[in-house]
Image 1 (tube, rainbow, N blue to C red):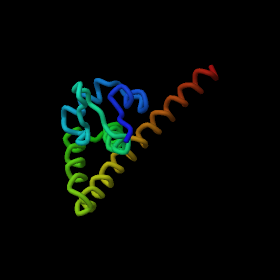
Image 2 (cartoon, rainbow, N blue to C red; image 1 turned 90 degrees about the vertical axis):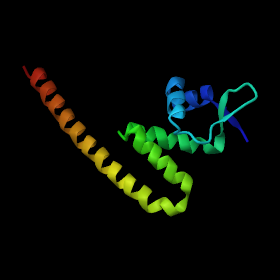
Image 3 (cartoon, helix red, strand yellow; image 1 turned 60 degrees about the vertical axis):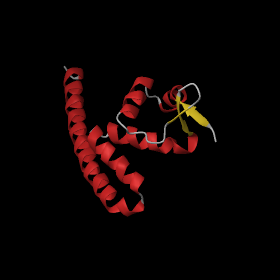
Image 4 (cartoon, rainbow, N blue to C red; image 1 turned 90 degrees about the horizontal axis):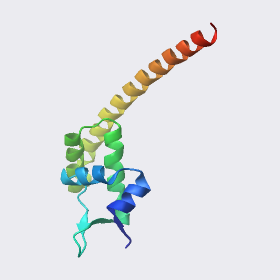
Length: 118
């Protein structure tokens, strides 16, 4: 079992250590352990937990909702329907953001073309 410390996780996932520590303090990483020097680590096979938290946060989900999702996941398969509903709701939010970004990109391109042609 390979241990990944905060520094390792930060480097592998491209996330500052202070963010990982903050999320851990909010209870979003239930599988962190402490070594004999009191350093936090996670077993490599549990890295997926960190990836889902980071994905959900980047998608705009609140820390409170992420915590709810993590708690449901810890309860097991019987929470699949609730977690599916959460993913469907988050998908709608992401699609709306993508639509807005596409509109912004189109406007930027319009302005670029306007400036290039004058």
